[in-house]
Length: 433
Ligand SMILES: [Mn+2]
Image 1: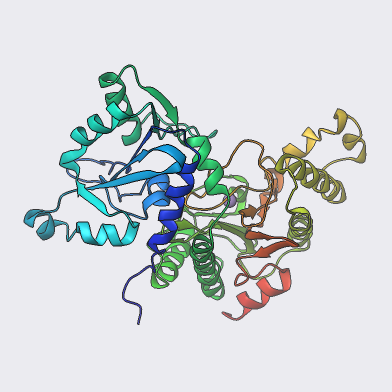
Image 2: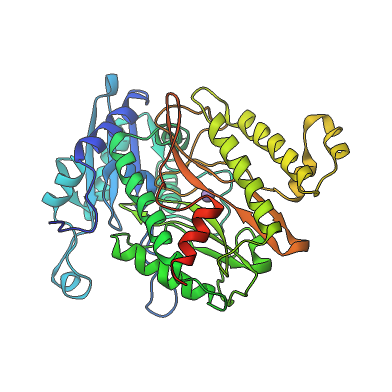
C-alpha cells in the first residue's frame, strides 16, 4: 500500500549529489543554500511553498526555512549541516507537523541536523575557516523579476558582515550537474510524465464544443491530483481558437467553439519534478483539412527533431536544423515562398514569423531546467521536443510537445500515454460521443 503521495528518492542520491558538488569545489570552501521564501499574498494569506530546486537537489528536503551548510576541505571531503525550522505545539496545531530532525536526517542522509536558531553562529564559525563562499545566485538567462529571493537576501546580509570573503556562484556548477539526470530522478520524471499524459488522455473523450477552457483545466487538475501529483508543474495553458497563437496564454477563461482548435500546454508535478506536454486537438473531435495539414506539418518536424537528438549533438546546431526542416513545411503550407529561404545567409529568420520559439529545453526539477550555455546532448539528459506553427490570420496554432530521455541510440518518449497521431486523437474524442 502506498502511504505517501510521493515515493521519495533515497538519501544515498542526495549524499552523492553533495559528494559530487564538493569534489568540484576548491579546498576550504563554504556552501550555503537556503529554501525559497513562502511568498505573501494579502492580509494573512500566503502562496503555496515551492522549494528551491538546488536545495531539493542537494538534500531532498521540501520544507520552508531549510538551510544547507557544507564545509569542504581537502580532496572533496565535506561536513554537512542541515538547519530546520524548529517545530512547536502551536505550529503542530495550526499548520501540522513539520519534519523532526530524525526524519530530515533519514531523507537527506545528513547526520548533523539542527534548528535554524543556530544559523548565525554556524555561519560565523564556518566563514572564519573558509577561503571561498559558494552561494546560490539565480542567473537563469530568462529570469526576470523584481523580487529578491531568500538566497539573495541572505547573501546580501552575509556580504555586509563578511566583506572580505571571496564569494562565488554555485549556479554554473549545479546547472551542469542538474543537466544530467541520475537514475532516481529519471524514475520521478517518468512518473510526472506518465501522470501528465494519462490525465490528458482521460479527459479527451469529455471535451465538447462550448465547454470552458477552465472546465478542461478543472478536469485535468482532478486527474492529476488523483494520480498523486500535488499540482500542475506550471500554470496550464488551455487555449482555444485565436488564443492557440498566444504562446503563454494562461487565463483559460473562454468557452471553446465548434471548429476551434484547442492547444494544451500542461504538466503534472511529481516529487518536485516536472512533466511538460503540449497537444493540439479539434474542439468538435474532427480536424478540418487545413487544421490537419498544419498538424501533420508540426508532427513531421517533431519526428525529425526526435530523430536528430543524439548524444554528442550540440543543441544550437540541432535548433538550426529543426528550423530548416520547419522552413520546408512552411513552404508546403503556402506560408513562405521558396525564394524567402534562399537569402539571409542560412539564418532563416523568416521562419520566426510562424515558429518563434526554440524546439527544446531541459526538464527536471524546474520546467525550464537549468543547463550550461551551449549544451551538448548526452545520455541521461531529459529534454522536451516542442515545435509549433502559429498562424494568427487563420486563428490557428499547433504545438506538439513530448518529453524524452536520451539513450545511446536515440530518444525515448516519456509520455507514450497521450495520443500524437490525428487518427488516435479523433478516435479517443469519438469515444465520448
Ligand atoms: Mn515546454
